[in-house]
Image 1 (cartoon, rainbow, N blue to C red):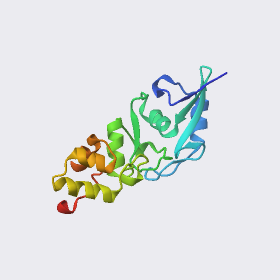
Image 2 (tube, rainbow, N blue to C red):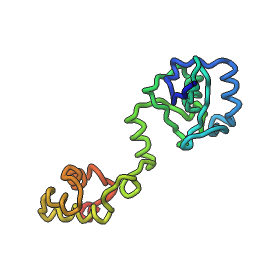
Image 3 (cartoon, rainbow, N blue to C red):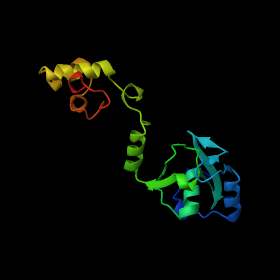
Image 4 (tube, rainbow, N blue to C red):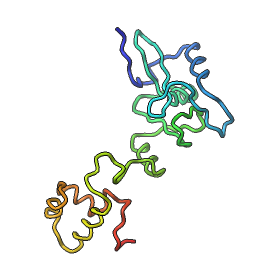
Amino acid sequence: MSTATAEPATSTLRLSEKDISRFWSKVRKGTVEECWDWMASTNEGYGQFHVRSKGRNNRLLAHRVSFALHNGPITSDVYILHKCDNPKCCNPDHLFPGTAKDNALDAKSKKRHCHGVKHGCHRLTEDQVREMRALHGLGITQVELAKRFGVRQGHVTKVVRCRSWSHILTEASQ
C-alpha cells in the first residue's frame, strides 16, 4: 500500500522530463506580468501536483515546483511566497523565497491574516476589547479583568498592551 506525503523537500525529489512536461501542461501561461494559473487539483486554493517517486505518492505544491524548476532545489523549511497574492499562480517571476516569519509578515501586511473576531479561537468581541482597555485605564487590575471577561490574565496583558487586538485602537489613541 502506498502512502501520500504532503510536500517533501523538493531538493530530494527528482522530477523526470515526463513529470516536468505534465506539470507545465497544467499551467495556463501568460506574459511575465500575468499570473500563470494552475489549472488542475487544488487544496485551500493552492495548486497540487501529484508525482510518484520511490513507490510513494507525493503531493507537491505547484508554486513550489515552479520555483524549484526555475531556481534550483529548495528545502522544506523554505517558504515560497507570492508577490501577486494568487495562490494558484505558478509564474516564477511572481514567487520569492522566505521564512515562516516572512510569510506571516507578508500576510499581515496584505491584511490576509485572521485577527479579532475573524479568528476562529477569539474569546472577546471588539467592544469587549475597548471596554477592557478603558477599565484598565481606570485602574482595574489585570487579574480582575481576566475574571470579568473569562480569559487568562496573560491574555489581558496582551490586550491592554495592544500586543493582541492591535487593529482595535482605544479612543484615547485615535
